[in-house]
Length: 215
Image 1 (cartoon, helix red, strand yellow):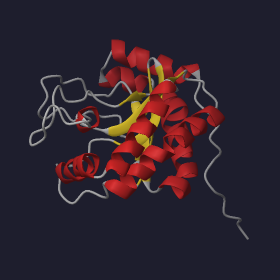
Image 2 (tube, rainbow, N blue to C red):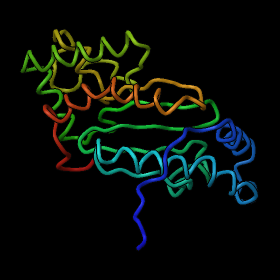
Image 3 (cartoon, rainbow, N blue to C red):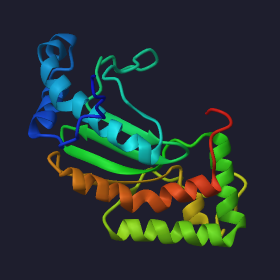
C-alpha cells in the first residue's frame, strides 16, 4: 500500500534565489530565464510551493505567483517579474516575496476592493473600539520594525474631513504590514513574522469581510 505524504518540508531559501533575481534584473529575457530555469525551479518556485503547502491549513487557500508579467497594457515589456511571491488567506492573509534583495514577509489585507475600503473606513470612523484596536496593532507592528503597505493617501479620503481624529488610519490604502528579512532567514523567523501580523489579519476579518465587488 502506498502511504500518502504531505507537503515537502519547507527548509528556507538560499542565496541562489536572490542571485537568480539579480541576474534576471540585469537580463530580463526569455533566453536568460530559460537558461537558468533549473535554478528558478529548485531555488524559487519549489520552496514557495513547499511553504504554501504547509501554511494553508492555518491561514486558508493560497497561491504562488507566476513568473510572467502581464505586459498587455504596460509600456515596460520585460517578460518576467524580478520577484516571486506566495499568499495564503481568506479576507486577510500571510504573504512572502523573494527577490534580489532578500525577503518581504508579512500579512493583512492587500489591495482591498472598493467595498472593502468603504467598510474598513466606516469601521475606523464610526466605531471607536475598532479604530483603537487598529491603531494599537499598527503601533505595535511599527515598533517592531514593520512598515505598513502603502503609500497612504496624502489627505483624507473623499467624504471624510481632513481634521477627522482618525485621519491617519483613514488614509491607509492597505491594511497590511511588511518586514524585511535576509533571503536565508530561517523558517522559524518567517513564521514568527506571520504570528506578529495575525492580529491585523483578525481585524480585517472582523471589520472588513470578503470583497463583494472588484476593484
